[in-house]
Length: 279
Image 1 (cartoon, rainbow, N blue to C red):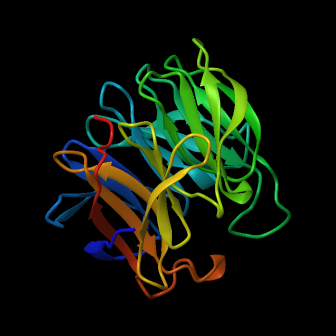
Image 2: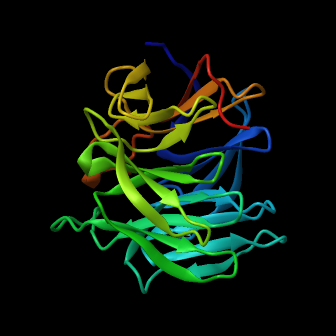
Image 3: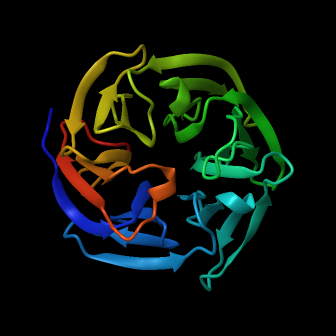
């Protein structure tokens, strides 16, 4: 167990954190902002995304930023002049989209579903779509119990996805063409995981309720970081000069209907860990 300290406060809900070019980039849900934050707590709004929630980010191997415009079922690409333009239309596969991860070959995985999380209604299992470097979009997995954070292992051979409503991390083998197979439970957890990140020993840090847990394949809990009472953890990322800083996106959870009220309780909290993230 480890304490955390506040690096930045006054956010709505921080999500989809990524360590990129020596700063922590993340989506500030409820404000349309993508922010880059240095380790001294200085933040810069890098762009505004014309959507509500969710919207998530990652980069292609050439450094091009991709943004999931979730409610509009679009994957956007940032041009050199800063403009956001369509990269892929995900609408024919599902109505709403959430998290993204890009592997080193440029295969882009996005999870989504037809479940109206914000508006209520019966739960609908989700799916994972693949966008290939040449722009082909296809579904590569189904039956996802509310997909959240995803990571790809450094060898490019395995995708791990957080299934929040099933309280588990699920793994797939990645084929040469980007397809997914050999679905299996990577780790069963006590509570539903949200955002996740991978460390250099192959363990996953998973944000889950009021803590982040470090878990290895098979489900053994190796450690945890707890945030102050009243806060929930939404996502986490490893970064800093030595990749040993765990950045935790936390906020009060007051229910879907109160996600973006007047109280800005969102924070970026940090703690030091022993095992670094992947460079």
